Length: 311
Image (cartoon, rainbow, N blue to C red; front, side, top):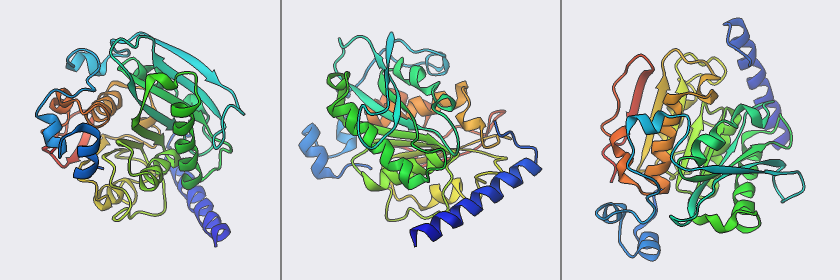
């Protein structure tokens, strides 16, 4: 059965890429009250929001700070060669050099079909300089399907928090996942398999299973491209968003964007990804201003759907 499913997915992906080529596309949970009570000594997210979050990192944000190429934290990086841990191949860890403000939330990021780490690697320094530990990954095989990539994401997070050289900088209770294309689909699967994650940001997610009604309860921001012919938003990103039962979710659609725009370095994707991670990994309500009320369509955004206001 699994072999048949993989063949079906391969055929669908090949068809999608062929269509993209014809169109000229470049190939280039919320926690329960019980867990909040246990972790924070309060009964809900709102109760945490009523006081300053103990996880705020860095100065108060501005439009300039969330769109800047680098945030307020000086960063370092280290290479994680193959064989360093189990369940993932290799990658690069980016982290704030100072620990004066305490530990940081962490994000694992994985690329899409036949893509190297380099495609999503810009997110490493961009997010780390905003106050996160970030692990960008290569996949075992460029053709790994979303469920396989999800296992790699979670294995990378386990390594990051238990065995890595920066484990003491990471709060193991505040973890998130990101990914592009099949890596975006992997972010959804990782959330379904580990509901304790604090946030997920799938970029142009590709997955043939479009229903996450009973699976994904992690606060999720999906970023899609309006003109994506590989993972069409009408059959993937939007149905994913609609079916997710997380009490906090959002869908950002990039105007005229193709499949690769959500993974390309730029201020719009960075602004909303940073704000989402800050809001739900760090419980930092200072970033609500960029998420709620939902931004109106403009030269960069064709639509934005959200569950505002956040509770």
